[in-house]
Image 1 (cartoon, one colour):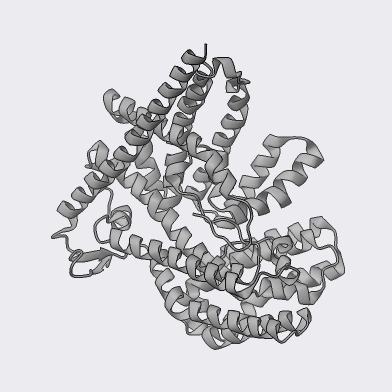
Image 2: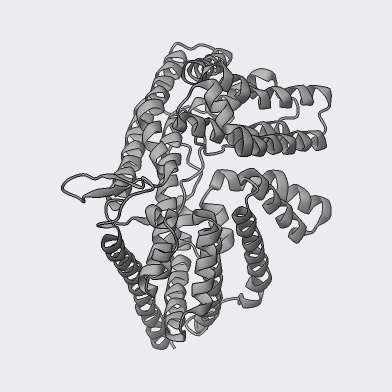
Length: 501
């Protein structure tokens, strides 16, 4: 019996090795095919949309700069991040001088206010303060939860209206550049989460706690969202300076590595230019290159937010704030629930704590709670059609996952472990189908409605052999994700200093 068991276990290890090999090889080959197609198409292409700039000479003749959000990271790194480091020095000096926590909070409020005033002027600073002031006044008048949510949703409605009709007007009035108005717009959305979360958590929170949380400099522009209960740990927990300096340097170096890595990749894989280019180029791609474009689009989005959140959390973690872990690589996620849980952990905490759990406690209806959660996600991200499609597909995927997962779960017995690996194979096959739909839903989010529609048509119109190969590769990806899931779970230990990739 033991020999049979060992044989089964040995076979399983070989099988898993095959899954890793197929999944990694398919990713590399598909991106390679897409990069070749990009090189052929864009080499002598007339850049009428301004999607390219001159590249580093020893890498490539041109670099893809079509993603404005990615370009804003460079602006943030050059012009805002040094202020973040200055913020650390000032806070550390106040701490070393044994000033009270109250002095620390006031100094951080004044620092952020000073920066916002000199960089964006009084117009942007006043507009940014509107939300916290309205929330504070509303809380003073009536502290009931319903009024806080009404205030939150009205604020989101005004932000959506501003994005659609008044961005250019505000930019002209403030006299700021495109990067500054973009970062200001982002800060409005993050401010909404902070204001809502604070008064849902802290029933009697004072004004100093509130504004020091809302105007915390390291996360005011690019996030990530941090619950107030995780934020205020910084005032009661202390880690030796030497350890924090070492972790800060390590975190910044890791973040800069991914920033440089993606910068190099954009010299060869023109994923953003292809996404914004007329669809004829993508429609004519053969299957390997087409799906390579899809994966490259997702990987670019992932690395972008590793860099964005990595820069912000490197500052926050130095101050002992309990920061959320960085986004998990999309190549290691195949379930909808894991994508939400591990990609943007801060937003996930907000949604679960303030929307999902309260509705489940109130109604015992998980489907209703999930629907309300995605309804908020739709409003918070903006009410565009592609956002609606993305949210609906995610909701359907979550419902299918929650409904079918119990049917495929079987208690394991050591004596027949190898044979009971079949439920895992069944779950991974089911996960492969979900992964295909999940990927397409994310393509709507990454590239807009036309890109998402194109992937849907290709998935169902492609010939049968290509579809079978695709599903097998996705099945291998689901197996890889399942195998690595316990490893990632052990690493995500909410350490306030260490950041995880």
